[in-house]
Amino acid sequence: MMDIEPIFLYKTPDAEKLAAYGFAPDGIGVFKTVPILRGAFGMVVTVSPDGDVRFKVLEKATGEEYVLVHVDSAQGGFVGDVRNACENALADIAAKCFDTEILRAEQTRRTLAWIRSEFSAEPEFLWERYPDYAAFRRPDNRKWFAVILTVDRSRLGLDGRGNVEIIDLKALPAEVEERLADPRFLKAYHMNKTHWFTACLDGSVPDEELFALIAESWRQAK
Image (cartoon, rainbow, N blue to C red; front, top):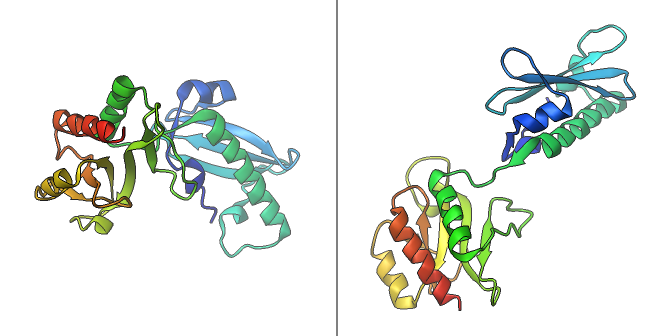
């Protein structure tokens, strides 16, 4: 079965862009039939209001569904061509009709807005292998003062399953030690553990306190 999840990873649909692309309402979400392989097939793409994307491929001549595109055991040059055409069409839809939304936690969004307002700093996604890692630099000396990452909770020694968004911040070594005495803070993830520490962006540290720590990190990055 074709795995289209990576194509739409961190993507949210934009209703205006979908309409401009030619998607029409279908009673629940929107749909569009995209011709592929020189019009020999039509790929019917549906997008639900919450961004769930599904598709089926119909043969133009018969109107019947070409189900082999979804069958893992189906191999060969032709079915491969159909799958490639579907992936290319879906990638075009993802690029033109969806917005990228990598960092999702509510406190993360408030933090991004505050950093932009306070320091005019934008997140930089520097690592192709880790598209949900964002670094923030001071514009005057280009030094990092914060890094936001999405990490599996188990890698941080936290209870529960799934990912959590965290922020790495800079402080004086004595202040780092002081922070680590508080269970709300963790040893720096992927940063120097003498000069950096980590906080979860899950509300365990209130916004006002978190923003003060970011401001101090900004000063330490001078």
